[in-house]
Amino acid sequence: MDERKREVTAILKGGEAADGWSQLLPLVYDELRQLAAGQMGRERGEHTLQPTALVHEAWMRLVDDRGLSWSSRRHFFGAAAQAMRRVLVDHARKVAASKRGGDRQRQPLIGVDPQVMGEPEQVLALDEALTTLEGEDARAAEVARLRHFAGLSVAETAQTLEVSERTVMREWSFARARLSELLATDGGES
Image 1 (cartoon, rainbow, N blue to C red):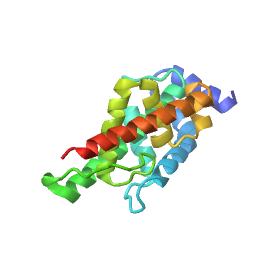
Image 2: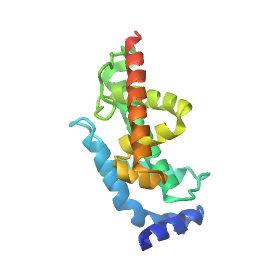
Image 3: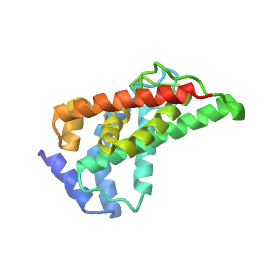
Image 4: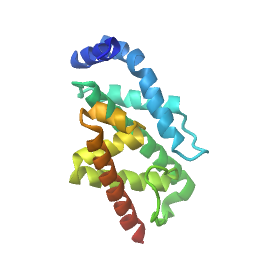
């Protein structure tokens, strides 16, 4: 483990002290920015949210969750991925509400790749499917969050979760299949 990772882990284990938060951000900002850029690269081209704004909004949510403390980098980056997910979902809801109004109709999502979603309705449907998956298989949902919302590679996800790459590939394969199934089921309802 390199010095920066040790320093991050020490700060995370130190709890919620205000100076800990201020020390943590410079150490993880570049990684969070990379994750956000990867995530935004999979969003629609005309998306109004920028990676820097996504990082800042996710950071504010992490800091505002004062009851939370993180015991490891895995735990922290999992929480960061979840915060980014919430930011993107909230942004999609806002765009959908202003774009569609109250009489919004469900659109079929059959055949939509959960890795390449961009329209607000698709983001909301993916969030709902991810919530269902989380209730069925928490680790598969965590892999999906890290791969999709945080933009981590298989190797990065394995390192973050402290499991083998093969385990990540198996969980990611299951998560994608299950999410596609849930999205197809959701899209079939009218």
